[in-house]
Length: 274
Image (cartoon, rainbow, N blue to C red):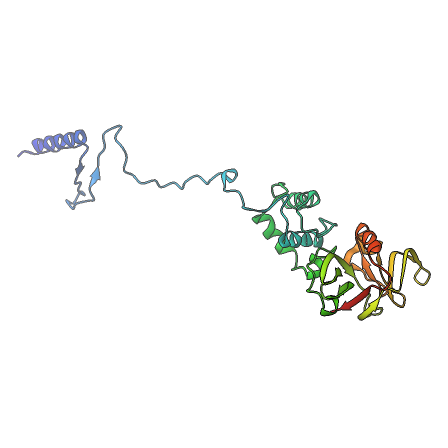
């Protein structure tokens, strides 16, 4: 075949290839085969793989953090949340063990300070941030203002009318014939002025008592050992277990001890134990 005819034949083959959208075998100038070349018709789907990275997802469309606790929840976990918020000065009441308005406000403040959504709910992101900034609270941080469970009553409390007072759980049980009628959180003396332990009896009641020794009020006082008495304490009501007495058994709930004062009689037994 002449050279001119050969060129025409190759050109015709190329036209057929384009029309059919097929794969043709191309060659280098030296006659060696190159990789097949796909020739596409205009408008046909391109098999070329996507080489640009996908657009990053919108942060606002990300899955929200899981809510752990919110308004109305209660229990030991809420006490720990509140105790940790106290450590970073976002709450000053409690812990109460109830996710109340003060807790919602404290969580909102903590979240806003750290650029988190101010929902007032404790989600997993908020909780992890708080954990990194605080330490594990001790038992009496969790029960700073009371609410702790009482120990089982001492055997000496199981008969008669008894103020059964546990130093280990910091509670007072008012018991009649082995039955607990009321349980209150209480506070004791310090190391230098400890509350005496043992079996005693109420020997004097004084509703509006005032201590001339310590120059402080001791309302609803029920004396059981020398100058030591069960009585209401405004300091315990305000500071919880952050303080201590001069040996007396402090009660922080004024309404409760007012009722208890009316129930207890002179001569009733008092048991102070660990």
